[in-house]
Length: 329
Length: 285
Image (tube, rainbow over all chains, first blue to last red; front, side, top):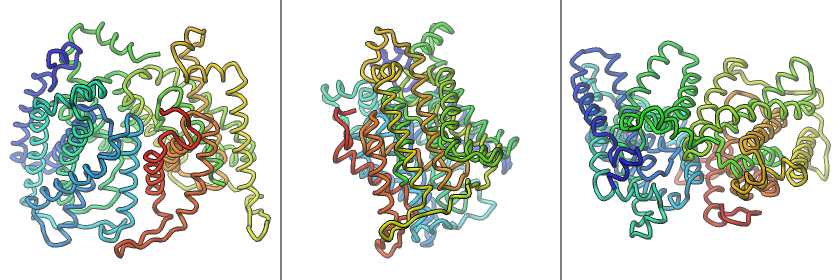
């Protein structure tokens, strides 16, 4: 099957190995970043790592099983609120926040996933979007979660702030290696079988619901871990932060730009897009969303299969144009 | 009353979804643009909002046609994610353009007669709302007749059944796709124009209508005029009842008016589980 996927131009079950090696190299370099003692850089790259983790969270279901979730931000929110509620009860340790967030997100994903993963295509996408919007509505109205006013979290002293950077780095690395390991295991092949032809997979003995819910829950845990680290690092959580539209869509675009269904794609996409977004945000404070909309349009039009696909592409420009022409009317 | 507008909005959404297999995430944004076109005509030329309805339809039709022909046709056969994201990107782009052009301030279209009302059996009915409902029903009826009778309408319906066969029969696919998307955008524009009479305007006003349009389509059954109409009216009634609710769960006070999205989601899930083909639907989508 690995060879088959490579032949299809999909670069095998984990995508191009060179791309993965480069990503690991960059991750190793990023570990040294706090040594520069540059607060701005540290914040920027912590954001990039956060988006990388969220992209991995989306990629497992969206990239590998082909089920497009448009509401993964709900798990980010769950992670963030887990930390916030724990902090309100005077528990302020990432060692408590992250495991609690993982458990909550996985449970929520299983409870919600069983009914909605029966839906296919657009129906699934909109159901997840509905859940994200509804979750924001609920958080706005529930007093336990601080309502629209939000909750403040206790932070570590300023000198130890790199702790949050290291934690986010570890989360991102775990997501990257986790995706690589999952993709190469029996799980990964079951996911891809579902993506390529769900009915055929079922006939061959892959029980789709079980694998889809597994992918959804594992992705939810990755996203929630990012949220659980983000909340104390930010020091404050409210519904517009925890369920931000940007956080919902950025990871999808990042996964596509980098390469869906690959182990390096989400990281490469996050590095490029979150970096670019940071530059746009500092240059064009008011209208950076406008540019971001334009970037999404351009990525979908010109790179619908992502950068990792381009790296592994054989046949050059002609093949690229032929692949694009297949989508046109 | 809101159900009528919703029916028009959902009809446009349903056409695009049923025929192009595109979930147009910019649909709510198109509604917003229709409302702002009406506001602009009203403030600049004192044009009656009801007269703006056909103008908003025409402008948005042209806009939609060009968008589909130029951009969306490029990726219409890609996996659904491509069109999903493309329309999302467009929506982000347009909302931010609207923020620049019209700023984030809340606007209102209030003609001289906006306060007038009459009373039937103790119930006060504002004239504008009744006229809005009438206009919405008229648009829906016109659309139905056009789809059934006209040559292009038949081509569109043929495409919904079998693209390959329609193409063999001489239907120009790229053109008909663009016309369909144009109609979707035009209907959104008309819905926005009608909406401007009873809602205040801001660039993000369209967002709730996107998810509602989707729910109405699922509720009524995809790709049919009757489905959109029945779905819209039923949803309008459900929503107005649900927003009156005030519940207290586990000591948490929740009021229905702040939970529009939750209501939409609950209706959606109930329908998808109980009757996936919708009230008027026949075959499964």
